[in-house]
Image 1 (cartoon, rainbow, N blue to C red):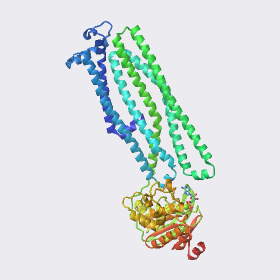
Image 2 (image 1 turned 180 degrees about the vertical axis):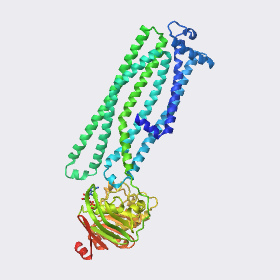
Image 3 (image 1 turned 135 degrees about the vertical axis):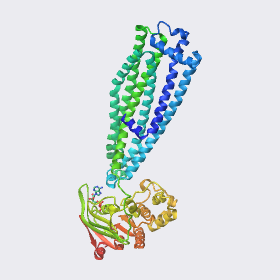
Image 4 (image 1 turned 120 degrees about the horizontal axis):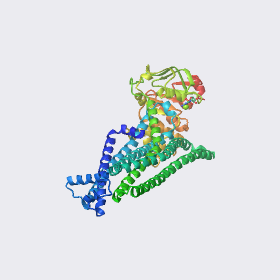
Length: 581
Ligand code: ADP
Ligand code: MG
């Protein structure tokens, strides 16, 4: 029930509306129901006013019926069969209207819950620190957005439905209580016993639900990972290995789901059996032992029977809630964790890039594993600086530090003399055109892949960016040109074509600093030449930092840094020509 309190705190307005509508619907139902006893007496042909003095009716019943008749009298309604049936129908009608209102509110709130949770999760994850994000499996995130949000909202609906049934159970219980408090007390005892005996089924479901949450997360993380590397798996006939790993989790998930279905079914049958037993026993005791009047017993059976059935339904809904609850807490804690790892972006000085970017005495390591120590590096404004070095020497790490995705363990990184930590990072990143090492595209048109949906960019700008990236020729030849959809992760294009499109994406925003992380590695001589020409023409207008082993990029560079394990060395022109051989 902690889950419902959480929701109520988050949506107080919705909650009050829902609860008031439910209460009113309960009251309407109670009013309709209270005409049942006089109604049956009328139907059985007993004079209502005589029936109240009948021998077999006890004091409480007489009181109750008399009160109902008094109220009818005060309202100038004759206690005829027609009138009382009409009250019953109107009661049910009003109840249905309020119930509908309440349920509509529940539906709206549920939709709101999923939307809010999805947005909160997305925002928190997108704003989190890069180092935090790196450790998050993408599949887990997809799973949270898809299944966990949905299960949370279903759990909320289950909780709200449980409350609805609870109020209805109270109404029937109250009518039964007014008729015979002794019989009702016994019935409440019996009901509590049934609920208590069945509670272990709720516990089983809760555990299975937790397991489902856990397994789904793991499975989706695994699945996404595997699906992204299907090609090598298939090429080397290792797909059965992935199959084995995934089917293990899938089978465990199956077991958890089976447990949930089974315990729900057992709860259903157990309720029905036990409640029927108690009601039959009650009828027998009332008629045989206490010689109660048949109309009274009939009304009691209806009221208590319905109260029982509603209490049973409350427990069933609670069981469903218990099944989905863990998804809510899992998502909630993921959101909280991501929010706690939010990076502060837009506080500080608006950057300029007039002189350059300087690393002084910078040391950095991932989780305590040092990548480099005391690194000094200067990226002069308006120049092309090229970084070369063996893989794993920390070139990409230098770029991540320059972008502010990572923070140095010690030393300082400064832009025109202003330390990076004092700079408005959002503004700084807005000045950067970035081409990453692994180029995957969005499953969309080439145009969209270049503009990323920015409404301020048009086709003409995209075309000139494509030209500058040496990509226009091949795009032009495609049957649908820039409207061509590139397939999942750009799979319909070659590696070199993808790279040039990503270079165009980096250029279209007219960046002040262009960063290319091995962005020309998959290019043929011709497109490499085109990119080099672009770099030559851009030099002076903007600052370029390129990681490349490409002869052209090394030759075009104003300065080349050779990375070695544990530091960086500046190379002069001689060394450069040696490297470029
Ligand atoms: P390069 O780009 O020069 O090939 P990187 O900068 O990507 O090298 O990596 C430098 C070193 O840091 C490598 O040894 C790599 O294993 C390690 N490394 C890179 N990224 C991470 C990460 N997210 N977590 C832990 N270690 C990492
Ligand atoms: Mg790299």
